[in-house]
Image 1 (cartoon, rainbow, N blue to C red):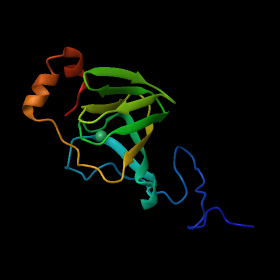
Image 2: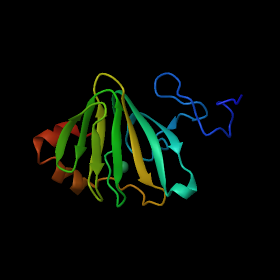
Image 3: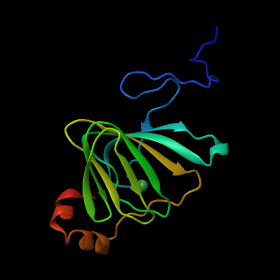
Length: 153
Ligand code: MN
């Protein structure tokens, strides 16, 4: 008989509401490092031999992730809830099991609707730091009134 809650077990059992045994619920980013509202981060897999990290983010109802871009890419699958994401110059409604590809140097932001928006996100372990939009970048994005209404920065 083995105990699946032991620290060296290959299995981390799911708890309620997208929590897992032995996986810490962390803040999304350091407070004040970038604008965001009500987002948590859990690192599900970060074994160095994988070359990638698999994370779970959750944006609380009404919350939003940082508007950013970077050289590395994201492979995202929505796990729970509904919301919207800006990818480049388009805003997309998203819901459970939808897949979102965020390519290099593409502005992106996730916003939850009136329920939590949870998503899995795969990234390279070695990656560049996110870039935040400059005033000029924001002005360019805001030329599109739909994007102006959507973005939080
Ligand atoms: Mn990003």
